[in-house]
Amino acid sequence: MPGPEHTPRSPERNNEQLRDTEKVPEFLDRKAEKALESHEEVENNIEKARTEAQQEAISGDEVSSGEKKAKGSDSPPPRVSRKESYIHTMKVVRSEMSAPARAFSKVIHNPVVERTSEAVGNTIARPNAILSGSLFAGFAVLTLYLVARHYGFALQGSETIIAFVLGWAVGIMFDLLRGMITGKRL
Figure 1 (cartoon, rainbow, N blue to C red):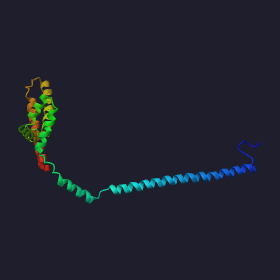
Figure 2: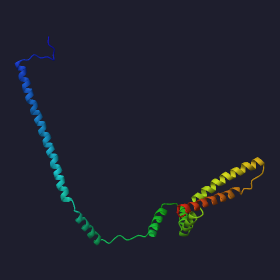
Figure 3: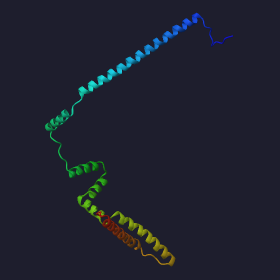
Figure 4: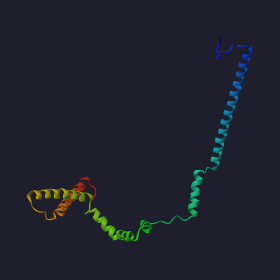
C-alpha cells in the first residue's frame, strides 16, 4: 500500500502539476518586476539628489569672493592683547569665587608676586633641588637618630634643616652639571 507521500500519477494530477508550474514563473516574473521598479526608484532618487546638490553647491571662486565681500562690509574683529584677555579671564573666574578666595587670588596674581615666584621657581626652588634636599634630609636624620640612640646622646633639632640644605645644594649642582652637559638652560 502506497504511503501518503506517494501519490499515483493520473492524468488529472499531471494537469494540476502543470498549472502549478505555470504559476511559479508568473510569480517570479512579478517579483523581478517589483525589484526592478524599486531599483529604478532608487536610481531616480540618487539622480535627483545629485542635481539638487549641484544646483545648491557653491564653487570655490564664489566662496572666496563672498568672504571678501563679507570681510569688506564688516569691520574686522578688534584685536585683544594677552594682557586684556588675562584680565578678563581673571575677572570671570574671580566672580565665581568666595570673598576670601578672591582676596587671596588678587594677592597671588599680583604682577610683582608672579614675577618673584617665577624667578624663585627658576633658580632656588628647582624641583630636583627640593627632591634631593628632602631625600637627603630624610636619610641623614634617620641615620643620625639611630646613631644618637645607639650611643646615647641627644639631637639638637637643627639636623633636619642642615641636612636639607646640604641635599638641596647637591640637587642644584646636579641641575647645573646636567645643564652644562646637555646645553639646556635652567
